[in-house]
Length: 299
Image (cartoon, rainbow, N blue to C red):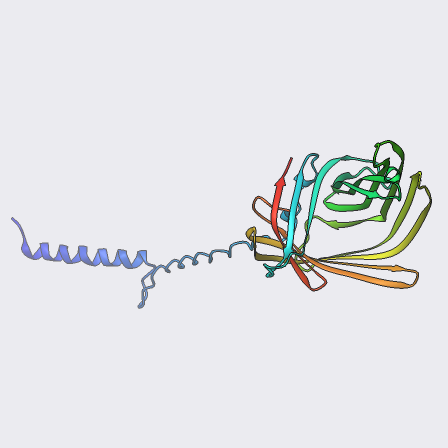
């Protein structure tokens, strides 16, 4: 028979046992039972790092394609903000092969190959003389070891004298002018804003004329200091468009016979786009010139 009294006692006993077991599991047994410590909250995720700063170096403004044989550059420049002005200048350059120059083997850039003709009239038309001059000018530089090196330039003018009436050739003259830098002017191809490349050099100019109007060779030297400052990147708008550009300040100080002459100019060179590495703007002697047409054909 079911005994309600004994059943209630057994139930109470079981409840007490369960409570005791719970307290024991929690380290209890004293008047103030303790509880298992809470786990530490996870550390907050670190804040995302700032995006890397855009590269402000001048590296993109030196285009290695310019030093490959066959590359051509031709541009015309005009005074900025002077639409009615006819003042301007132009330049054409064709990258040629390497040549022996100034005890080195730099790349030769043909800057001009002009043909000019003039006539010296005499009292007798049969004595009139026609002068046909072919003038070739070259600049010598190279990109090597992360630097741009400039060795100098040379101009060779060949003149043919002929009878204006008969065309008979009466003689020829060749005039050569060569300027070399020792040591060559050099600056890093990749500069950071505020970097300055400074160098002292000796510039030697040699002139020689041979042929019917020959003249003794002459040589002159002057000491110079070359300073190139990279000002940093600048966004500019020109007749060619809007470009990210590298701004440089060139300063050349020469001393000859005790007299000092200083030349300073600012240049902006394209850092992007189809004209990367090419001149966009130049400021010299208080005038700012913008390139208005540019034909660039890299090899």
